[in-house]
Amino acid sequence: MYFETVAELLAMDGHGPYVWAAYGITFATLVWLVAQPLVAKRRQLRELRGFLRRTEGA
Amino acid sequence: MHPLRRQRLAIVLLIIAGTAAAAALLGYALRENINLFYPPSDIVAGKAPVGRDIRAGGMVLEGSVKRASDSLQVSFIVTDYQANVPVTYTGILPDLFSEGEGVVVLGQLDAEGLFHADQVLAKHDENYMPPEVTDALEKAKSQSGAPEPSKPY
Amino acid sequence: MWAWFHKWSSPRWFYQLSGTLLPWLAVISLAALIVGVAWGLMFVPPDYKQGNSFRIIYIHVPAAAVAMAGYLLMATAGAISLIWRIKLADMVLKCAAPIGAALTFLALVTGAIWGKPTWGTWWVWDARITSVLVLFFLYIGIIALYEAFDNKEAAGRASAILALVGAVNIPIIYWSVEWWYSLHQPASISFTGESSIHPQMLRPLLLTITGFYCFFGWVLLLKVRNEILHRERSTRWVRDLILSR
Image 1 (cartoon, rainbow over the protein chains, first blue to last red):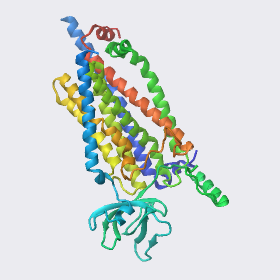
Image 2: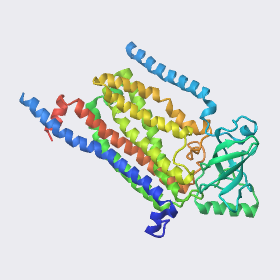
Image 3: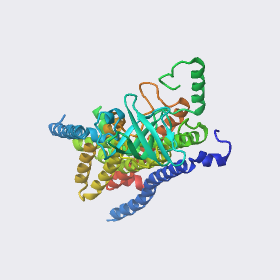
């Protein structure tokens, strides 16, 4: 490991706020990108089941 | 291929060719304006307007940086190794500003050819190296006196 | 070749095949991203000039690269859907746009955060940065255009044409740093010669680039599969699939 302590890793010689902000925004965006279709799929399967049951009954 | 599809393919190719031609013409018409800055040789040759906001870019000439002792005023020379433009600036310089490094300055040129900068940006190059590697390079250079290799490692 | 083309363009076939591909893409992208980011943040030495702020490279470059590659994929899908009227290509166009927009946003934001300590400014209107901003607006325009039409066939066609027109921007972004004087530095990774980034720093970058590409593929497949289920909801195979679960 390049940094000696966790505090040094967080500070990054003064560049910490920039580096961690960039990584934080990226992490949040990637999580949102992958979570959105997963949530949509659950909702869609629920709706499809209802839709199919209705058309089946008709 | 089905004639209808061939026709659609032709339309698609036409769209691509048309926009490429439009973009090329636009780029040609704006060719000077898309450049972010003027190189010093253009400024010395009188191609840059005087008294208007422009940007100049090049290297900070080694040994040219002079700081005022009582203020944040600093003067240096921007060069492309063909021509030199003297720059004066009052303010805080970016961390990466140093002699022999790339720089882009925003400001106005006066009639004497002095550039009054309102903003100084450091321009860095595409080389990324760990500090130990540059130290080793410096050492090797000073020992052998050999010229710096074109690639830094 | 045409048989292969038609097989892949069948939504049902694509749904089944993508289902087996999905876990692989997920595992590879997560592994490459976690290892690459940890390596780049904690183990690689800082840059001799930029110091630790250079570590932003491990997300900035992959985001920008995949945003551009994703656009080419989307424009190709647009061309295929215009010429052959293949439904799957239209779905790929529709689903790739929001992912590309998000990655372009990331490239712009991480670039701005990097620019402040490195150049001394968050933003500058140079050719590279401005053309990437245009890429972002193209993605947004394609999403908006797709939503603007009630008739989905017309929506797909209009978006495909916009995607094709915007494709001219990709070579402009790529070569902007060489054609014009810009503040942005030229590329550090070279495919033909020696890269100007030290191998020690390059290795984790190659990992995160791989990770971002696989991530794009993963999310794209998730979205396209949802779209397939929605559009094919009245077919027998979707009914059997849903009711058998």
